Length: 393
Ligand SMILES: Cc1cc2nc3c(=O)[nH]c(=O)nc-3n(C[C@H](O)[C@H](O)[C@H](O)COP(=O)(O)OP(=O)(O)OC[C@H]3O[C@@H](n4cnc5c(N)ncnc54)[C@H](O)[C@@H]3O)c2cc1C
Image 1: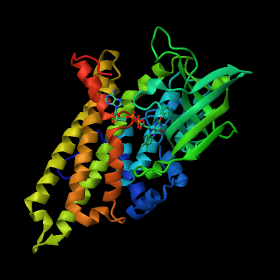
Image 2 (image 1 turned 120 degrees about the horizontal axis):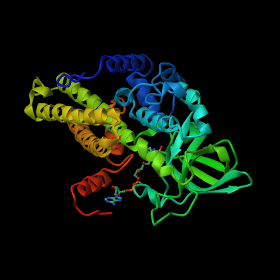
Image 3 (image 1 turned 60 degrees about the horizontal axis):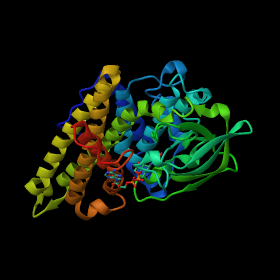
Image 4 (image 1 turned 180 degrees about the horizontal axis):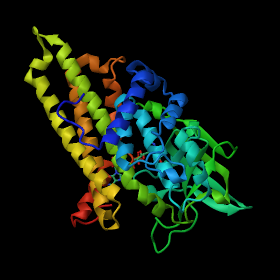
């Protein structure tokens, strides 16, 4: 409950939000969410239940096997997942990215997987990051070449969520030399089946987002049929570019979910815990931080909603506005949530660190919101450049 932050969103979105929230209330009570986080586990049955209620393929057209719905719908579901188990929201975002990409008419045969992806019966990962290419994504080294009627891939992807569960990884690889000095040209997306000797997946254990099932993926002469090329050869970045604004809004939605949940715990603890004969929430030193958090979260939400509205209008004349607003939303929501969680931790004292409290999970998970899927420093670089300042990178 976030008293000073009423949701001003369409009725259908509210119904969807409530439906997902009810399912999570039944299937993912706090103890279960904390156990999945502690054990770094993924609940495939829950994933399928989310699929059967239409919560996975949101934003991918129904005509091609997605669940339909709007960007705002997807953001609301992501936020509700993040309130309960932020790692699950990360998986929701990345699988949504795959589905949004596959609903593009140029995406090729892999789009036939959309109905199963939306139902949660098939899982695919998105492999962009590499050991030498995170923020500087275009510095990636994975290659794909045509040989004997297949693609043959070599390289390494890292921090790839859900790869251990995935039937295929959508790999961004260099198929052609950069053109006209542009590193973004010559990269392609290829759907690489994981069940083959050329693909080795190794689990990475993290201090945050532990249930997102983050992995390294090693590609040693991994093969994929030629028709598993997604979109046009050498134009992978152009295909991805269309989904990046949405990904930033979804990252912002994760931040809102974590922030709301952390503030709820802050207020609940401040009301229940007593010191010096009073609830600690009677001390201004405990209540003012909560007041700052509720106001800052409302401001972040307003920015997220603005970005959602502009993206949903899909007017080409507003492309650069959509890019700017989604970047701002990602930045402000992430920074806000890091502060909100820090304030909540202070208000809870030792209880904030207790394993049975979800606050410690939110505290660890909120770190991701500062650097992924794009680092907040990089967002600042781009915003500064949009103000006419020199490009700094
Ligand atoms: C839980 C989790 C799940 C993930 N899931 C996926 C996934 O499914 N698929 C995938 O492809 N990736 C995934 N990632 C990777 C994520 O997208 C990267 O972590 C992110 O892109 C940042 O890259 P990096 O961690 O290599 O940081 P780096 O690029 O090494 O950056 C380190 C620091 O340097 C700063 N920096 C770098 N360049 C500049 C510059 N020019 N100006 C100012 N500052 C700069 C950054 O802002 C940052 O503070 C995941 C990561 C995590 C932790």
